[in-house]
Image (cartoon, rainbow, N blue to C red; front, side):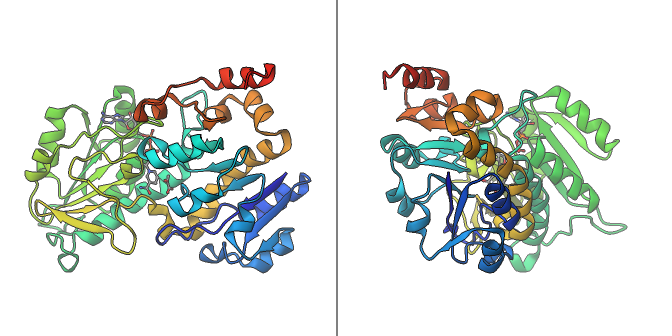
Length: 378
Ligand SMILES: NC(=O)C1=CN([C@@H]2O[C@H](COP(=O)(O)OP(=O)(O)OC[C@H]3O[C@@H](n4cnc5c(N)ncnc54)[C@H](O)[C@@H]3O)[C@@H](O)[C@H]2O)C=CC1
Ligand SMILES: CC(=O)C(=O)O
């Protein structure tokens, strides 16, 4: 199979879908890799390193998109939809529940769209989302700390306080990978940290893990409202896999926050979990102010630390990518239930229920599509 890796074109997105080690893995398995010239530079990988690992360097994105399978990091932007075609395997983050136009384009062009973020193991964990959630969770606190500084528009509060001055209040909504990593960093810096989740078992685990240094609360509108009112820094970290993020923090709650407080809505890639987060921001223009509160809603936070993020991401994406290339996508998903959950669109049908529901498409189970293909109905 020919694998294509274009340069990312999203604002300040310096990650890349493959490392030289990943190229070597595909080559060892008998495949060919085309990579767009300079695609890896932002992550510190030169064309020469890719070529030494066996890749063919192509001058343009157009050439690379002609491959059998395109491996990316972020969802394609509108200018890339022109490259979609029947049978193309697209393997990347997609976040389709928040992306109607992209969903339409993939359906209309019969692309095989495999989303990193919905590949799910039997224990319900999301192995291809996890490393980027670790990065974004950790970053949410360093970003929050930075924007709490007066010169950045914040209220001028140091997260850890100092002896004789209370630390900042950090409130995290969602106690999964992002939430846990945010809590780790905030506690490490000496902040007073409260975390809310709807899963009581998860709250129990976190209570054990942090040994009394984390206040846990059941997530409900009453507790969220009380916690948000006190927050200097609010982190949105909820997820219902594949679905649009639930809007748990209302505009009324945000109005109760003090001026100069900061919101970092990490869940923006799934549409955002805070009502006043009404736009996606970028690394070059990361915040806006609403009701006196700074809002940060960058959908590709790990793109700011591309060297760490590219290596962490490709550590987990490439083994599945090699399975797809070795077996073809149909056999690969039949052999691996976790990978099968990644298939969001195939053959013009939406095969991930939360995505179909978000956009009023008919949900067709993947098994039905594969069976129809086998007996030649479609
Ligand atoms: N902006 C960015 O650059 C990035 C965004 N993300 C996003 O961050 C979000 C969180 O990801 P993960 O932590 O990996 O997900 P996760 O699945 O590990 O954790 C989500 C948590 O939300 C909780 N939850 C669900 N409904 C809730 C409710 N009503 N109230 C409180 N908690 C609730 C779940 O119980 C779970 O513990 C996702 O949308 C993910 O795509 C991840 C990486 C980078
Ligand atoms: C998860 C995601 O969307 C990102 O890492 O950019």
